[in-house]
Amino acid sequence: MTPPDKIEPLDLWYLEKFSENWGLSLRIKGGIHSAFSGLQRIDILETEEFGRLLLLDSAIMLTEKDEFTYHEMLVHVPLFTHPSPQRVLVIGGGDGGTLREVTRHPQVKEVTHVEIDEEVIRVSKEFFPQLSPGFYDPRVNLKVTDGIRFLKECSPKSYDIILVDSTDPKGPAEGLFTPQFYKDCHNALKEGGILTVQAGSPYFQQDLMARVHKAFRKLFPIARVYLSGVITYGGMWAFALGSKKYDPLQGPSRASKGLPLKYYTPHIHKGAFILPKYIEELLGL
Figure (cartoon, one colour):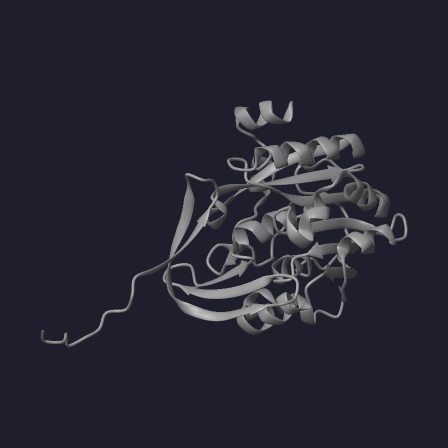
């Protein structure tokens, strides 16, 4: 048999299953980094269409192409709801995307970033520099520790905004989805404070979304769920927001003009809270 003049590269794909019968697949150019941090497995792959892909314990965390659709909505909805967010606490989000968006707000005077896995931060700085500028902002105080323990020891009424950018509720992040953790967050918020967390897929994690919203309704006078389109999370993604005073349905309290945003707008801010009927029924709205 005559050998071919050119050996074509293997057709490699990464598949993440969202259920037993449905998944998302990305064509892969090759691997960039693989390691075990002591807490979780960290992998970075180069995809053909979505740029670099970050995996934690084999679950998709972000891609370069669409990470902004998640990070902008987690951060800017609560920060523009609050009229003067000066002290912000970020739990998780070791990739830096959430921190990057928070530090775009000139009103913010101090950001405490709590991440349990220092290796995620190191890897992100090296391989995702576009996500990492917030790590170098002088307003940021980085603490490598357990966010659950940090909130338990936190002084009452310390923060205007708390953002929880966690993985799914398993492994190190499991305790970030409990009523007790949300109660500790509530205690750490000032009188007008706002808590926002990622609340899972409205298609594949409906029980989680409903459980988080139920816990927020018990703690906060204002409890809302809103959505963003995130392709690599299966289409739509849900966020839960609890506020002691300010209602996000009133729209942004300040103009976002001048910020280098690609997804969030004042219209998106309001429209994100318009929920499909099946989600309204699921949440008891």
